[in-house]
Length: 414
Image (cartoon, rainbow, N blue to C red; front, top):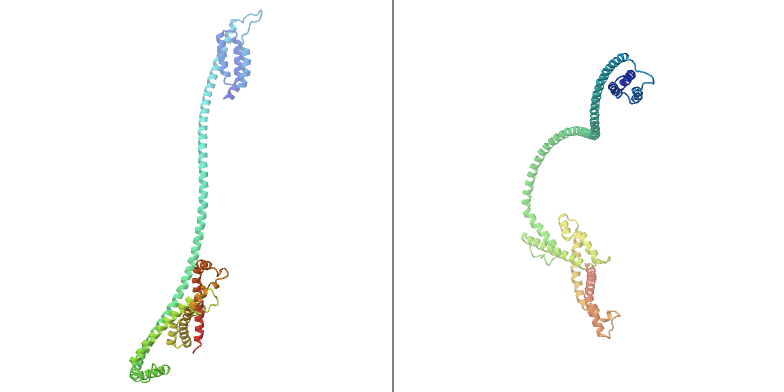
């Protein structure tokens, strides 16, 4: 709009300039009207053009003084010029109104453009916010996509492993199916063999029952004759070992044989008690801290080897281990006698041991015999506490030595 006003300014200014020159000839009211019209026109042109034009117009509008000796123009000529100026003024006012309408139209268009611009800015900011939210959402979606891809890869790996296991199970099932078929065939064959063997076993059982019945009949028939003979042979053999018990005048019967068995059982029970007594005595008298203790070696030997009852059971049932059974019976018998004699010797020798321990001469050089108070003090403070324990230790030591000595002496006697 300013460009249009600038392009129209020179022509209008020329007309206004001429109008200003002519206005000097008329009244002041007309000059003021032309001046206001000029101001309205110049207000709508550019600043640089307005300042320059204003100076030129002000120079033209300045009231002229009449020259010396001059006279005013004739009135007739002034009338035609004023009409021309008024026509030009009317044309200028029409042009000014047109320009004002255009200016208002441009201002309204400018206001609409500003409103549209603000709306566009607001829409752009809204779109930028939405774009930012979409970018953030895109980032989250990308993260979710990465996580889902990792889960998908894991699921694919697990699926492949499951497929491999399925293939293995499928091959194993096929193998087991083939083996099952073979096992079924073998089972059928074994069932047939089992039926055949069952029939043969039944036949053999019947035959055995017949033979057993015949043998039992023969045994019952011969038992009356053989039982008395066996009892007599056993009695004769036992009489050779113990003639004072199994006398020649006694005729053995079934009742006497039963009483003999009862006596043997009692003797076996007595030997079991003796065995337990011997092992316990060895455990009580052994010196565990002494590596060369003889009683400890015998205790370990008895604990690590089968006992008397075990050897007797094996010997009676199988006939094996006769020498071991006899040696074990003799060892326990000798140990029982050795404990009795050895402990008796300890009891007999114990007074001498006590007398030696209570003799002040054997207490050491720190006790002077010429002072009874010194002897009493030593006995009260030292001997009264140490002597009983020492006597017990010596008695146990002597008991072990004497028992072992008696065992060696008795075991050599046949």
